[in-house]
Amino acid sequence: MSPESKLSVGQPLPPNPYEQGSDNYEAYERCLQLERRPAWNAFLDDVPQNHPYEDIVQTMTTIVTARVLGHGLHFAPNDSGRNALVCDILACSQLELALLAYLYVFGLIRVFYNPEGPTPAVTPTVTPRLLLKVAAQDSHLLEPSSSNAAELRALTLRRDDHRCVFTGKVDRRSRQRGIVGPSPEATATNVAHIISQSLTDNINGVTPAHQAKFEWARTAGAMLEHFGGFNARNVLNQDNIHSPKNAFTASIDPHEMFDQLDIWLTPAMDGQGQAVPDTYDVAHAAGLGAILDATKIKRQVVFRTLSVDGKPIPAPDPRIIELHAACARIAHMSGAVELLRELYGEPDSIVVMTQPNAAYELTRALRTLQLVSATD
Image (cartoon, rainbow, N blue to C red; front, side, top):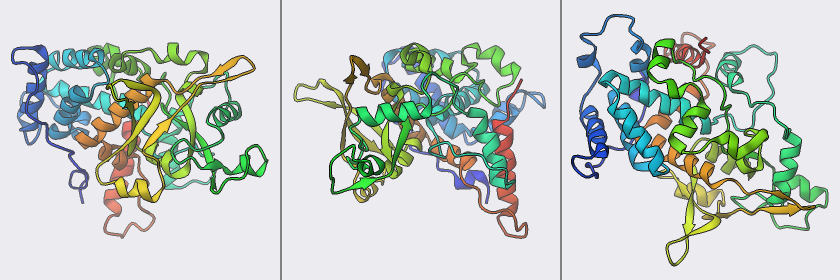
């Protein structure tokens, strides 16, 4: 089975919602036109072999490209991000739109997508999975910071009242140590990062020829600022991504769903339509409502800032939460989330090369290594 046949293409773009004649309208119209194209073939006739977009168009189909960009306009976290994307789309040729969508998927959305959950320890056992993990994860390991893992864990646990923010269940170890009183339900928890990948690494798979066109997209941090409208380093200070502003306490199931963009947080509104500070409704991908009920995930999450000895432990920053939500929506509506799962998911065993799917799994593994290998 080919990768294309296994991937979802998301939801079709709705009719153009923007005022005719505006830049927003023209940019969205380009997405609609591209969505109607079955393939890139018509645009490749006059392009020489080994052109810099050859690998990109093999990954980004016309439909996924159109829907990443079109839904990106709709779900942009703010006007600044939408205006930036409009300018990007209008400045691109048709083939360059494939690279633009690739940058948004693998340079921005990928920053929030973490299929592995908490970073596991790398063992010396050599397996196909380890080879993929080294390429797909170790090149994105979190940067050193002034807050190590133990310190961040202690800060978020204390701020979050030693509970999973999604379920309200008490952290099991905190209960065992007597830090919290008796509770009917306890569970294992860990630190969930909102931004879960390094912001300083170059975006993998982008050649010097690509960089010349998209100078603003050299790193994930630059893309985050471009579309999110804020500088993550200024928000997180010296802690980089290991900051309470970028983390919270979560139990295993909701942590995994949040990391895989299956759930996200949207501002809760009061009776006057105003956002309630640090209060969020839990949104989820289509068809997952029953899963939320089964895992006892609450429909609303409330964060807080806690002062300890005169020093605040801040709540997660709303701008980071908002950008995570935008990326989750774009990923699901465009079908890009399936592309990420396809490339970074757990491969089937390829030890027995006579299995019917062995060739496909090996090809997928090699494709992943190619996409995530660093480019100098």
